[in-house]
Length: 195
Length: 291
Image 1 (spheres, rainbow over the protein chains, first blue to last red):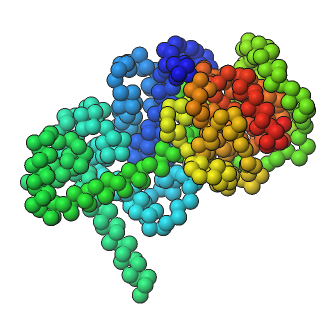
Image 2: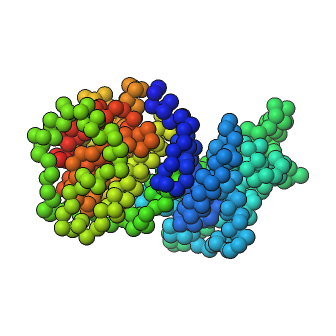
Image 3: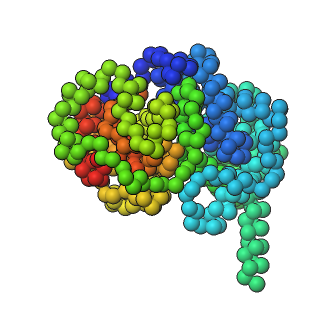
């Protein structure tokens, strides 16, 4: 298929006189953007912070594109850049709204949500993720949301596989308990409304 | 011990256990109803987690991120602002339908003429009216380049996704219904009329909301069995820029044919050859009264 072959050409060109971007590298970066946004949204908890994070990650990736090893997973490499920048940001300033209400822009979509209960359940998920310690949150996002294996997630976060396994387990249990608590609260609200 | 049990259950769900370990867990599950309930609860919470986060990957990617991925700076943040759709009352028709219909015939000649760096000479094609004359030609070209960069970026997302292109409204049954649904997400004056590209061998797969020229727009996704043509996208959005006649541009290996007419911006995007794009654009123009 000639069109796909065209995408794979590893030629270099100068885009807008700024950063020389290999065509293949640029294509890979654009293709992974939706998943980077999702990962960053889970880390930061807001649309604006997440997009700032992804933008910074793109800039860093372009500056270091020579460091990417062909034959390895591009998405894992980008997740690692995102998480590194995120950790740097957390260390330098408290950008996260710990324990607060869900930001209005959290879901970030103009899709109408038809079922209030479904929306509340999903809100509860965001809230539960928001309450997790950042190392557990990262493991949960990489494995359960992004579908990385434990080994791949361990390489992104640069910890042993066993550490990922235990962080993930704690995160999953906490998530489950939080969702059960949310359901209990919803039932109480409904009962009160019925009375 | 309980923590270790939970570790095992989670790893079992994630398919991370060796065969012997899996058998051990399965034996445990067979014997322990509480463990089975715990496994079901963990599976359900994981499902909800994926569901909650799945929305994010279907959102339109902001212009500034596509620009960043291409190594560019977004020239104006105003481009990301969503403004009310407004049709220009006294829009000029810069080319007659008759002439437009003759364009496919001259497609090969056109390809020859525009082949020499037409991408960076788009300013010469702009027909500036009183309103747009307030804007410098340089700004107009920059804005034009950004929206075309993004149109090419959106197309790349479709190509990269293969058989599952990112679509907000799939055209599963009646394609007109999908057009109607995506139209409902656009401002009143942006509603899309029916459009049929079946005669060109193109199947309408669905549509998604994107941003073009800083306003909500619809990206219609078409696929075909003809791999030489590949997928095509048609972006239709509102525009406050002056009308321009159909213009060819190129971003890397992506061809773009774009024009503006009476408050709407159109871009046909694909990797098919320019003659084919001209033919389709001509048909689109007839069907949508877009020229």
